[in-house]
Length: 127
Image (cartoon, rainbow, N blue to C red; front, side, top):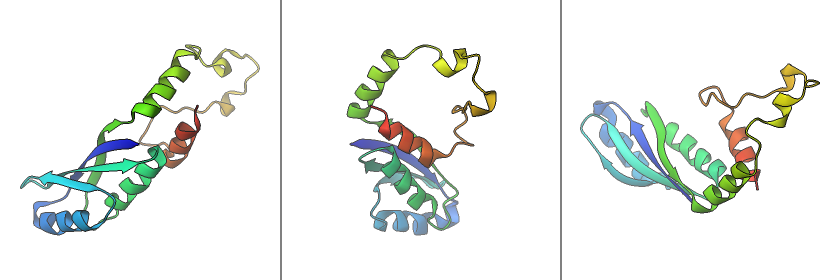
């Protein structure tokens, strides 16, 4: 089970409407908000993909300016991925292969331009 905290931002004029929509959307738990339009919620999911689906629901609420995941916790996934990382080479094999076509190398470092749903699926499949 994954649990993530999200800070939702709206404008003060729509704060009460957005808070009410968040409380009734059934994909998250509302915790608190301030007069500036910052709202703190948490979401849970069986994997990163499910959490991203719920985040998309929050982002689609009218007058939500931004909804950003701040902290995430998943003990089971963390242990699985730490094992993969600990057993991995420091430099991926593809980068040491002189026959590799550079256009086939996928850069996964820029989250703003990343296909997050595809990344989540790939992340969830790593064992």
